[in-house]
Length: 245
Image 1 (tube, rainbow, N blue to C red):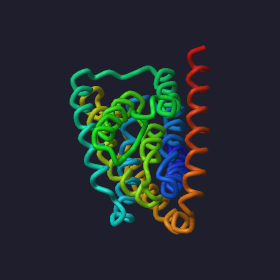
Image 2 (image 1 turned 90 degrees about the vertical axis):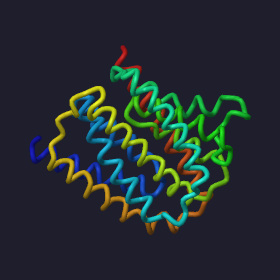
Image 3 (image 1 turned 45 degrees about the vertical axis):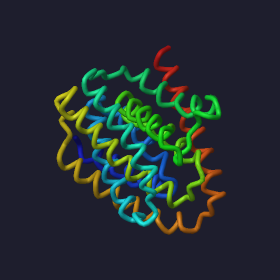
């Protein structure tokens, strides 16, 4: 990997970690789009997993007092069940399908029956969405729109959403790293220097975002989060359709 490409990716990683540090979302989606455009799918999945584990792990550490463990436990239980199934199937989708699945997931969550809509306070609901998000994560490399929609569906305040989702995402991206780093590929041949740069860039962006999240109100947080999800999901649907055509 050239120094110029490495520097460009580092800048993108700082920005996306900063964005995720404020809203707990969107950064991973943008980074995935950039990586898919520049790198092969296996390498993209592996490097993205390393970056997101660093970003979410550091975010969870910064806000650990706000983690709601009942919601995280249910979500992670469903994720573990889904990972077991996908580790057996070992399917890697083509890029156009990955974009479409990624973009459509939050819109599907909005039109399903009220009783099945996201709510982190419900145990079975959390397990079901945990399983769905893990399946989407292993299909597309990210599950951001669906994960974000799930955590916004209840009454958690903004710091609780960011902290609890960060804990869940660490496990999700660790599963993805295991899946794409050994189970279905040869690991993607990620440059170790780039991996270190990715971790440092993620920590820097996440740390810079903390004071901004403190200043936001819960109303402002939810308004902007909903707009960001819709905008990015729409972009990925359009990209998937374009690639198919």
